[in-house]
Image (cartoon, rainbow, N blue to C red):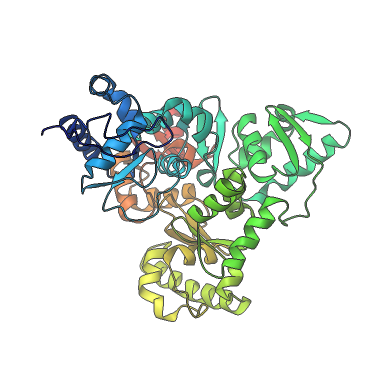
Length: 459
């Protein structure tokens, strides 16, 4: 394709401006780059940064007098390939992707969550730098530290808070002991706290002092100064149990004042971009405060906005109880939120006039009072607490399934595929998902009851 040598206006953003009078667009190179970008987008790559693309084609572009990533971005916009759109510099996405661009820290959060267990820093780095084409220095300095709901397990290892399945109130005995320690000292090491409460930590799936530090930082960042591992100090702010303080109060008020569901994108834009708060200050409210519920993916709502009452809660729980009894009579010891939604939608309690039920909202409300629990990484299977099969965790459910359907052991690929089809697992099964005292163990390519392996060792 011949080069355009006519003037092409001011195009670059955040860099030295280029004008048509001074620069010609190398359309053959730009077309090659567009095809490369299109082939990369899709699946778990919602958009990518022109920063990494520029580095890949840097030598070619410099020869064509395109000296920077912002100049490349300008050329791409001018080329105006109908398959691509440019929502904001330096990002490129498919034109069919018409929704709001999710901030990169939230894209990284989704990636970590979908790995279903401990994720190494190198995995996250490769995804951000090699697949999303993000500038590596910006990723390390800005995007990774601001990725919400991610906890450090050890040096270079991370896990999503949802994978641990930990509720704030489960930490009460640990926090009470921390308060006692800090009553006689201005600071304490989390290593000492972990050692003192090792049994409690183990039962909660907290496997290291660093993970404990991250969890306290996640739930109690306003009550404690956790600015440098392993030291913990009082911050001078003490909250009443379960009550929001500081920016959390403002986030919750903002969601309530919306009088409709609110996207994380909107919260992020308002509190992070406009007001300068940290991303975690926004996202922590979902896990720390019961009045905030997920409405759908990346959208939350305040429970008062739904017009939800105690009678509504009782009606929903009664409907779920009957549904689970019907399932159990057919040999299925758990329910599925998706099936519950499809089969009983017309019998669900009424919400405020302008609201419709979603499967996500059903799961949130069912598990809110502790009488029902969602199990598995699909966040679809659920059980009543207690129940006749004694199932409360993923470990319990897999123990039941292996015992009753697989004679105690199964090939891991077969079991995982079956559990995906059953609505329990989303991707893989890892030891971290089973917990430290699991009755189910992964031994090579076999998943089996722990008792079977122990008996095999003795013989």
